[in-house]
Length: 316
Image 1 (cartoon, one colour):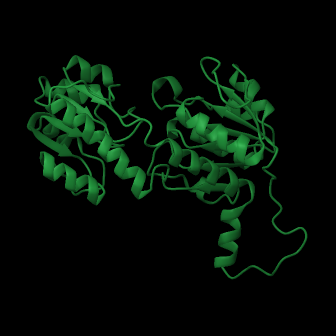
Image 2: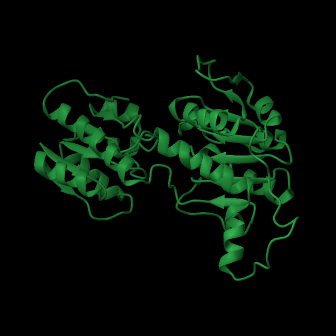
């Protein structure tokens, strides 16, 4: 069994892969090109793809009958893989749920606090040597403790965010999802997204990417938000209509945004970069040594099960 890992991994993951499998680890940190993906499907038995490796229906159609029989995705999100096309080509797909939950929830809180309290703007002020000292009305931001937060999507990550908000900051939690959830903390189920947006101080996005959630946050939802409200996105960039978000920020329709993901990443619009009321991170949701190693080991657990002919731990 020949294994391809499409980007460099942590030392622990690379060491395990080399010890256990006949592996090639691609040394390029950019997503694979079309030709590289075609070669991956024809030259390898198993591929560990990563975010940005667009295994589309067209790629599978062009390959025809791939040698590869498993895409063991590195990451919980797999909207860069056309799962139906993969299955039609007899290629199974797995992911790495659970490993990313706490780290991603932590980044959501980082963005919420940083945007509300103008931390990025303040840090830039200090670094530029323009801070003139404390005074009572300097850089007044938005209080977080006790405020109302709306969470769109109440899966593992949404619940982890909600717990941090409720238990850590005494926030009132409301949420929107397909169905009401049995939760171990108080939270108000609001099935209508616009109604949720209109009722909260912070709107946090924690839904999967894909066709069903593309532009879920559009001009209409942004218009429903309060002028003092802040949008936080740690989901997928395409969940937000980026042009509509820019317009809402520029017009003062909403107070700010904290973004870890972008509609056309790594491209970030100049308009977002120029706004002080926007916190921008370079997709850091799972970026810790421990979490990335855990994700890599989970992907390799799926590979090992496949090679052994056992049931896959994390099929999608």
